[in-house]
Image (tube, rainbow, N blue to C red; front, side, top):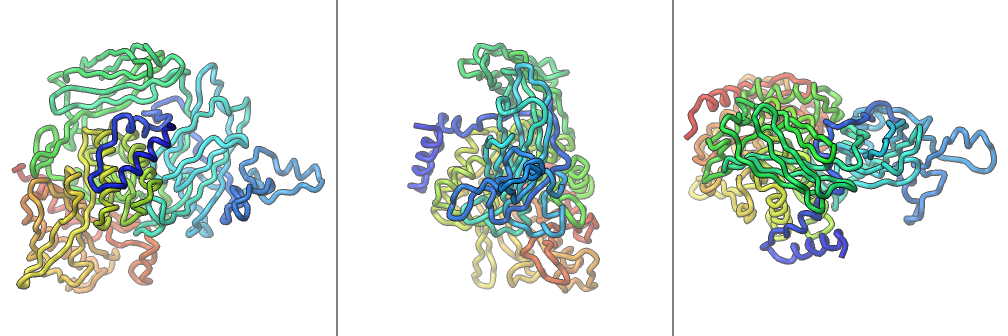
Length: 628
C-alpha cells in the first residue's frame, strides 16, 4: 500500500468515531515531507527574489481547456520557448501568451498590492523568471518556496516538477536532474481561489491575498546532506534531538552536535535510513531562553561532510494545573494578536526583517508584552526567528478557521499537512510555545473528530509544546445574571483553554455591564483570552465615548473588559484583537472601514489609538506582579 493510500485509510478511519485514536508512529513518519531542508535560510543558496514577469489566467486555460481537456499549446504558459522567436518564423502557429514580454512584478509580495487592477483579482496568475545556477560538481539543487497562496504549479524548463496546496508553509522540490547548463526558465502558476474544500474556505475576516508572498531560493547541498536536525531541552534537564540525512551515503555516518560556548557536544551514528538521535545532560551553566533574557546559541550539526548551522534557544514549557510554566516558573502571557501585514496603506504581505521588527517592537516595547498570537495561519519564518531574537513567546496557528468541510478526508489530510509543515519549520524556535489547531469553529461531532485528529498528530510530531485552540463561548441568563460558559468537548485534547469573546462590541451588552459578567469555566487548565476587541477609526473622537468606532469607545471597552477578565482565577494570558488595522473585504462602512477591520490598537500606518495606552498600562502593572 502506498504512503498516500495508508494516509487516506487512516483518515477515513478517524472520521468514523468521535474518540479519535492517536496516529501510529509509522503514520506520522509518513506525514513527513520528502525534503525539509531545515535551517535552509543558513544554507548556500541563490535568492530568486526580484523582478518576475506575469500573465493573468482567470479562466485557467493554461492548465485545462473546456470540459477539463488538456490546455491548448498556444495557452500553455509554462512552455520553454521564446514566443517572439517563434512568431518571427511565420506560419500558422500563434500564441495567446508571451511570458518573456509580459508585465513585471516584484517577488515576493501579494499581487493585490502590486497593481490597482489586481486589488481584488482572485484566480490564476502565471509567474516566470530565468536564472543561471552555480555548477553542482556532484552536489544537489533544490527549489524552496517559503509560501505561495494558495495553490502552486511549478515548472522548470517546460516540465512540471511539483504542486503544492496551502498558502503559508514552505515546500521543497529537488531539481538536480531538471537543471540545464546556462539559463533556466522557472514558471509558477499561482491560483488564489478558495472554496468550501480549501483551508481556509473562501469566507474569512481578513484579506486572503494571492501570489508568491515569501522568498523563493535555489538551495545547494552536497550529495548527502543534513535534511533535518532538531534539539530541545526537556523538563528533566536533558538535551535531546535528532538528525536525518538524505542521500546515497546516509547510512552509518557519524553525526556531531555541538553548542558553541557551552561545552555541549554529542555524537551518534545514523541507522540504515540515515537517522540518528542523541540525549545528553544539559550543563549547569546553560542560559535558558526567556522573554527577559532571549539567549540564543550557535548550534552546529555535522555529518557526512555537511554542516548545518543555526541559532537556537533552550527552554522548557509545560502546563501544570492552572499554570503555564516557562523554565519551571509561572508566567502570564502579556500579548496581542497579529495579522501578517506590514505597516502602510497598501500592504502586500512583504515581511522583511525591518517590517517584522517594526510590528514586533510595538508589542515588546510599546505594549510591554512578552507574547504574540500569530493569527490565523503560520506567519513568515522571518517573523518567528525575530520573535526568538527579541524575546516574544509565540502562539502559532493553522487556518482551520470558522468552518471547513469537516467530513471530507481530503480536507483533513490538507490540514494535517499544513500542521506538519509548520511544526517541522518552527520546532527549533524557542519562542514558539503553543501549536493552535483552529479558531472559532462551531461545536459538532464531525468538527470535534477533525480537530482531535490534528491534536493527536501535533502531539506525536512535537510533544514538547502546548496544544491550544481558540474556542467559542455560550452565555446564559438566570435571575438577571449573565454567565458565560465554555462547553466544548475539544477541551480534553487541549493543554491551554483559549476563548474569543466580544461582549460589549457584538451583541446587546453595554460596556457598563461587562464587569458584572460571570465566567463559569473549568479551573484545572490555564485560560487564555485569545481575542477580545472593538473597532475604532484612528483620529475619530467623541468626548463622552458613547459612539462606536470612536477611540474613546474602544479605550473604555478595554478598561471594562480588563476589569471583567481580572476576576477569573485561572486566567494566564491574553492576546486582544488586534495590534493594527488590517485589510478585510467584509468591512465596507464608507466612513469608518472602507475595506479595513478597525479593531487595531494601531492604524494601518502605525498611529496609536487611545486604547493602546490602556493595554500598555495594564501590562506594565502585570509585569510588576509577582507570580502566584
